[in-house]
Length: 184
Length: 137
Image 1: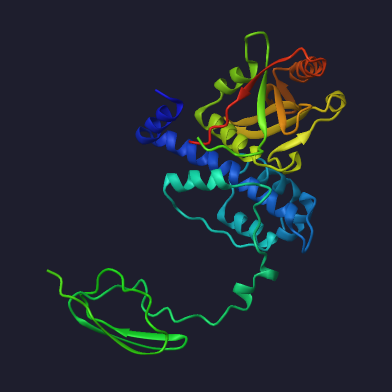
Image 2: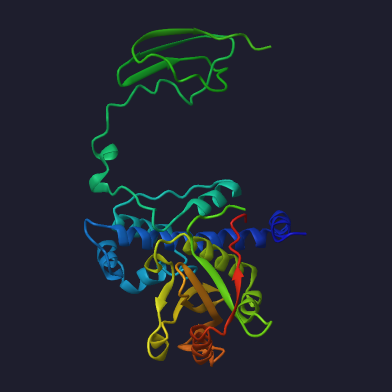
């Protein structure tokens, strides 16, 4: 049995093994991201850990710990402080193991960077949003629904049998009436 | 297995047919091994050693031999792997694995052993074994 097969087998059967695996990945990738972002920061530049410490309002020794793989169990509050110091956002997202592995395999400390808040035009001055209509709300089975939209706003009426997803390619203006086929 | 073009290659310095770095690796817990594997994977893709996570140049006599160390925390202590750069580009050689607690290395002769092994590498008498980076797990 290969190393990989053995590992998969343990991951499938043991909660402890899964915890160790996830913790190891987080323990390396979080510090690597913090270090990469600190070194790439230009406004302000942060060549030293104490530069980030000042921005994050934390002790330099803690930044040192956060940049050491596996060293620190960061709380969400501390993670938020570090992200704020780096002027970046942060996502904590549950994903399949395959996605976690792909993210790790694609992560490169040299290439990894994040648009900082000062330069984040999409956040500070976003383009007028295309009407999102009713994406994600659900589709109506077998009943007529009415979608009335104007630029930047959308409204919909549907009955309580709504299920599934409505296509999001409706025109941005005017009134749409969609006949949905009856199910069953 | 995914190959990372132009990435770092890592080697263990052998003692005869014996691999002390692998012995250290095998002594780690599953989490410790996973952490070291993840560290290899991330640092492999660094453009330069300054981007390596958890690394620093050692001071004192080790500095004269350009010995650096990687640090990571597992099994309740700081694990350390000492190494040097090869003459070849993007090739790094691990000399010894140990742990560090309360300002002491275990084994205690970790630094002197690393220096001896670094010397044999410079003299061209060291035997190396490439460490595989597990990109598929």
